[in-house]
Length: 401
Image (cartoon, rainbow, N blue to C red; front, side):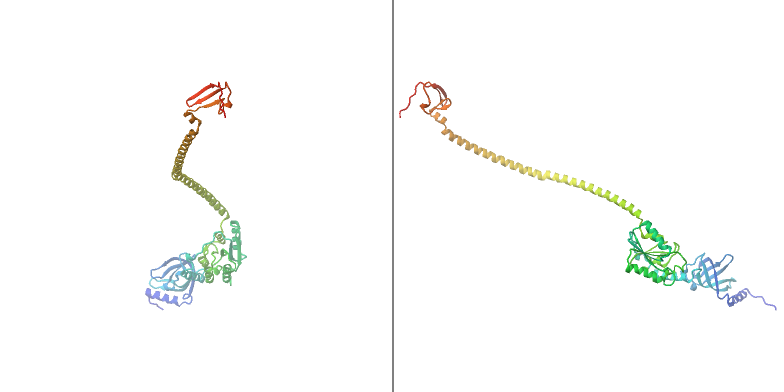
């Protein structure tokens, strides 16, 4: 049979119908690594899927593209869609209707959706983050009792700050019922047995293993806790919703214990520094106050000298002057009295009698007032007003009675 020549467009159209009608190619799943990833201004996404030996061009129309997946070159994915031909270029490509990151799939999508939802509600906001106590007395740990998490936390706290009490609330950290047990542990430390800090954690694992810490119930329970919570879920590269809601995220359980406790050696060092600074400060204060006190006393003494003492000296001078005046008056008065008394006495004195022509006779310094006290030839002294006479008694004339 002789077949006519087909136009290029007819050939491409025929091939397209064949591909679309193929039961396998119309509903195909391909896994591979993304390359040549590009988001067009129209919103359509163009990329290639490749493995070690080959590649296939792909397109995702904007209505089928989920931005929450954060696709980029190197991401391994599983793409679902159909094979068809782009007639203009005569090239076939995979038209992707659904895509999921390989090894994560729908869980990763759910993770991003819940993360976006809680972020919009403000559960991740820094203003709600509670400060972690610097020197706790007790730490509550919500984790498996048999895992390495609790051992790591105990070892680190014993080394750094052995005074703290570690209180374990044992829970399942994956599987059925684990999310409820985690919430119960958080509520237990908030309502029944209060602690200073709560550590919620588990070891590393796949996203499925860590999924209990991506549950909305756990996220809201962490957010509602009145006690600061440190999230220590998985390894450093693992992130969970619990990490974003908690007050502090630790890359490992050991790091969580370091965040939750101070280093005792550092505390001693800081306390010694504080003590040294306080002693120095106190010494400076004492010296400064001592200088102020001395200066104050000096000023007081100056004031006393300039005002009080001078005033007292002035008052004392007045008192002395007054005393001297009174003494002088008293002396003058007494002197006048003495003169008057002397004058009076002088008038009564025998000497006054001498002035009137009388004399006084002494015998051996004894006044002779009778002839009986002398004998003939006795030597006597006759005292006159202007001198005395030494005489000898020649004759005694006794008065007849």
